[in-house]
Structures are given as C-alpha cells and as structure tokens.
Image (tube, rainbow, N blue to C red; front, top):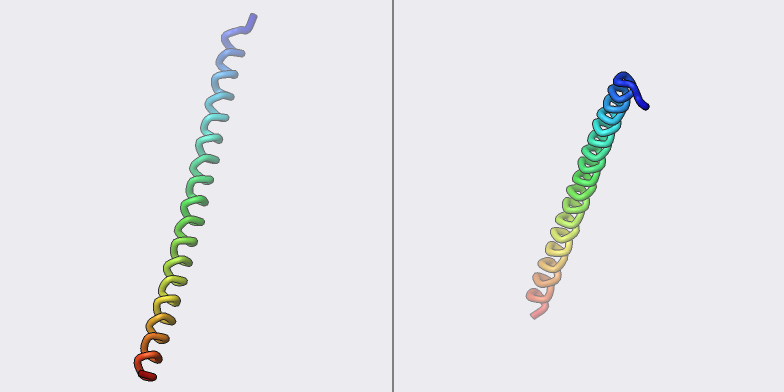
Amino acid sequence: MKTYQQFSEDIEQRRQEMAQRSRDQMQKFKEKSRTYAASQQEKRESDRERDELKNEIKKELKKEN
C-alpha cells in the first residue's frame, strides 16, 4: 500500500504536470492566434492590392472610351 507521503508526492507531481500542460496549451493558443492574425493581415493586404489593381484597370478603360 502507498503511504501518505507517496500519495502526497503523486498529487504534487500531477499538479505540476497539469500546470505544465496548461502552460503548453496557452502557448499553443497564443501561437495559433498570432498565426491567424498574420494570415488575416496578409489577406487584407492582398485584397487591398487587388482592389487597387481593379480600380486602375477601370480608370484605364474609361480613358480609352
């Protein structure tokens, strides 16, 4: 049978593992959030460039007519 000391050590070890798992999950979430934000920024820039190109083409077409 386990002694009180062994139970106490097991509980402490589990607490440490849970704390580490929690830190790992938070770090993973933060990284995922940064990646998502970066991809959204990239998409906005791409959309802006596309809109500028479309407007430029429209202006050129109006000039030709």
